[in-house]
Amino acid sequence: MRRPLLAAALAVLALAAQVSAAGAATISAVIDQGVRISLPAGARDVMVGNPAIADINVVDSRTAVIQGRSYGVTNLMVIDSRGRTIANSQIVVSAPDVNRVSLYRGPSAGAQTANVSNYACTPRCERTPMPGELDSEYARYAGPFAAYAARAAEARRAATPAGQ
Picture 1 (cartoon, rainbow, N blue to C red):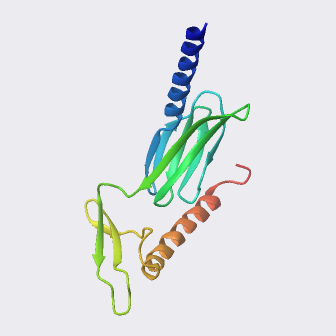
Picture 2: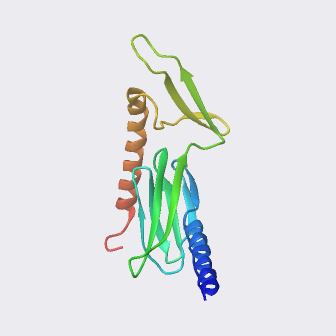
C-alpha cells in the first residue's frame, strides 16, 4: 500500500517540477527591440513585473511581443481564466551585441563618473542616447529623438481620416 502511494507522490512531484521549469524560462530581450513569444494555452491575462524595464503587447490568444524598455531584469506572469499562474518567466533586457559602439571618456574635473556615448553603427555610426549615460548628455540627445517621435505621431494622426 505504501509503495503505490509513494510512486504516485513522486510522479506528482516530477510533473510539478516539469511545469515549474517550463514556466520559468528566461526571455532575453534587447533594449528598444521586440521579441515575439508564444503564450501558453488558456492564457487570459499577462503582466510584466516592472513595465519600465519591459512592456508586452498581446497580438492574439497565442502570441505576444515583449519590448525591451531599459536595462534590467523583471518577470512575465501569465494567468488563466481561473486566476492561476500558468507561466512565470524571467525577462532580461540588455544591450545589443552587434552594430553598436560605446565610447567611454574619463571623468571631467570634479566629476566622479566617466562619460559614455553610445552609437549605432551600420555602415556609419550615429549617436543614440541610451540609459547609463550622464544625465546632461542623455538629455542633450534624447530630446530631439523624443521630439521626432512626437512629430511623426502627429503627422500620422493628421493623415488618418476622421472616424478611422
